[in-house]
Structure formats: C-alpha cells, structure tokens
Image (cartoon, rainbow, N blue to C red; front, top):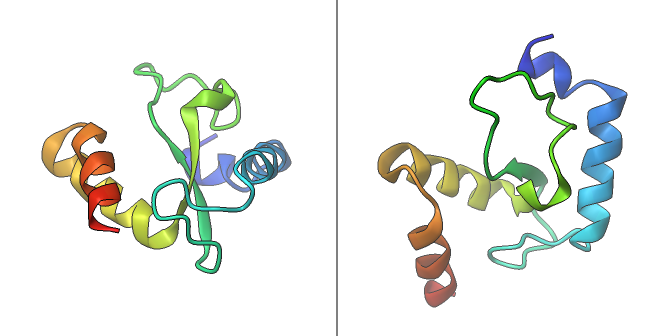
Length: 92
C-alpha cells in the first residue's frame, strides 16, 4: 500500500482524528484554528515499513496547511525543524 492509499485508510482517518482532538483542532505552531489542518509526521521509519497510522502519538503534530507547507519546505532545505519552530514562534 503506497502512502497516498494509506492516507485514505479508515485506520489513518481514526488516527488523524485522535491527533486533532489531542491538539484541540489547533495548529501547534501558529495556533490557527480556521485554516485547513493537517497531521505532520515529525519523523518516518527509515525502512518505510511502518504505516502512516502505526507511529507513536508523539510523532504526530497538528499543523495548519500554511505551517505544514512552510515546515516541509524548511525540512527540504535544512534537514531539521528545530530552528523553524523557534523562528516561527518569534515571528508571531
């Protein structure tokens, strides 16, 4: 099952709702509650054997679509999100 198919699975939908509820339907970076929310995987299994819903809950973070795009772009450029979190908070 490829990643796109995993995100269509009822098992992923259940995990996604669990994380959204845990985070009170709020972006964990900018605190937005109005923009479409995504669930960001903060890390992946290097073997890609773990399904999207099989990670421990601390790996997931609720992000608005804007922050999710920004953090994804940052990760592609810098390889980590630690500085992004600090800079994003300071800019708010």
